Image 1 (cartoon, rainbow, N blue to C red):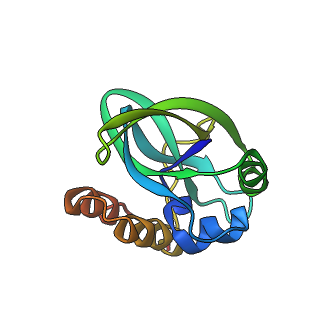
Image 2: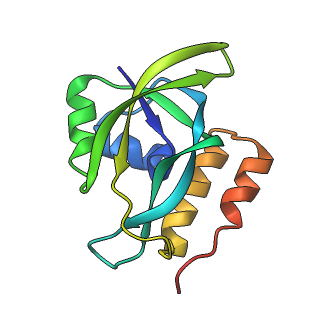
Amino acid sequence: MWYFAYASNMNRRQIEARAQRTQLRWMMARLDGYVVQFNKRSTVDQSGKANIVPDGSGVVWGVIFELSEGEFQRLARFEGGYSRKTIEVACVEPTARFSAETFVAKPEGSDLLPTSQYLQIILDGAREHELSADYQAQLASIRTAG
């Protein structure tokens, strides 16, 4: 199965630890018709966690990872408050469309800010997978809490 990561799970160290496997097969991917918002409230520190929400003109860049169902279930244990959703993403190389699973949450507020540490994990993943400089800059411009 393919799993679309758009936030902290893009970070290789994090997803490999959570899936309990290294050297996962991956491809850069684009999800059209959505945007990333930090509108899921953390139960730990009340900060904003990333979520995708429909937006007709939006584009979310991320990474699809090939996981077994068991690896996906291990990953899901870390995604409290999120639900599994099947989406379709476009890959650049190879040029193709893939059905993928991802995690979405019910929005809990529009004024939530991510912590700088959480945003850095997302930025590290975007850099590791060579997402476009423009998209990385867009992520880097997000205001953080504290």
